[in-house]
Image (tube, rainbow, N blue to C red; front, side):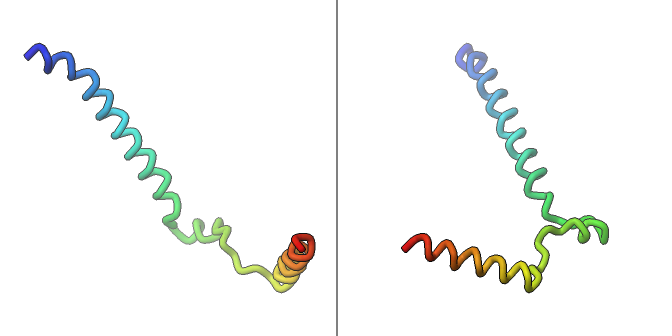
Length: 68
């Protein structure tokens, strides 16, 4: 019985750490869900415009030339 009383504090700390990790992960993983129409406005995954595509292509070709 004496061994059990010695092991209780580490078990409690382990349970607290695991609970905190689970709560943190649930909070962080839940950010991707949209709560309503106003959340759709904050979406950063927008479709690039033609000008942005040209800029990306120019950057990629310039980078390829430098690598040679």
